Image (cartoon, one colour):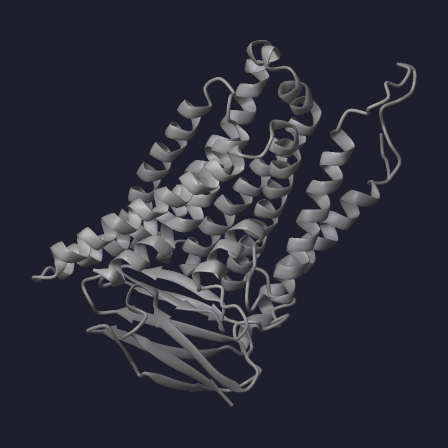
Length: 115
Length: 281
C-alpha cells in the first residue's frame, strides 16, 4: 500500500524542519547581566548593539518577587525572590528602551540603550 | 495603600471582565453559577501553585518555562472560547429562543459550560498568580506599612470584583435576543486578544522569531497600562506596541472563529436532507 503522502503531510514536514533549523540563527546574541537589589536595577542602564538579539540575565537578590516588564521590549516575566531569569529580546532598532518592576514601577526602573 | 490598591486592581481587572462576560453568556443556564464558582476556585488554587513554584517554572525548559506555560494556557483559553462560540452557534439559538429546552439540552450544554469554566479558571490563575506574588512580597518585606498595603490590596481585589459585576449587569441589560449576537462578538474579540498575548509569549521565549518588529506605537495616544487601555486590552486585545506577528495572529484568530461560527450556524431555510452538509472553501 505505497501511497504518495498527502500534500498536507509534506507541508507539515517542511514546517517542522524549518522550525528545527530556526534556533540555529540565534547564535550571535548579546548577553546583558542585570541585578535587582533593594528594588534597584544594577546597572540601571546597559548599552547593547542594535540589530542583534539580546539575552538579559536578571538575578533578583531581594527576598521579594518582582515582575520584570517592558512595554517597548515586549517582555513580562516573574522572577522569584532570590531567583534568576533569562529574558530573550528581539534585535532592537537604535533607541532607549525602558524596563521596570511591575510591582514597584514608580521606583524600580532601568534602561537598555541600543546603538 | 493607594499604590497597592492600584497594582492589585490592575492585575485583577482582566480576570474580572472575563468572569463578568462568561457569567452573562451563561446566565439562565442550569449549573452556570456553580460553573463560574468552580472556575474561580480552581483559578485561585492554580494561581497559588503558580506563585509558589514561580522560581521553578521560570527556570524550567531552559529558562522559558514561564513563557511556554503562559502561551499554552492562553492558547487553551482561545480554543475553549472558539469552541464555545461554535457550539452556541449550532445550539444556542434554540436555547435562547426556548428556555424550556434548557433542561433537555443541559447535557450537551454542560460541555460548553465546562469549556467556559476552564476559561474562567485560566483568567483567574494568570492574574491571580501575579497578585499572590505581589502579596507575598508585601508580607515578606514586613515593616509597619505591610498591614496598610494589605488593606489596599483587599480594596483592589474588591474593585476587581466590582468590575465583574459591572460587566455582568451591563450585559444583562441587553435584551436576550440581542445578547447572543453581542456575546458571540465579545468572545471572538476576547479570544483574538488572548491569542495575540500567546504569540507575544512565544516571541519572548524565542520560539517564534519572525515578524518581531513593532507594528505601531500608539502609547502616546492611549497607553495600554492606563485604565481605559487595560479594559480595551482585555475586551478587544488592544496593545500600544504590538509586534507584527501579534497583529497577524490576532487577525487570523478573528477570521478563523468568525468563519467557523458562521459555518456551524444552522441555516434559516431548512435544506433537503440529500444535500451534503459540506461546503466548498
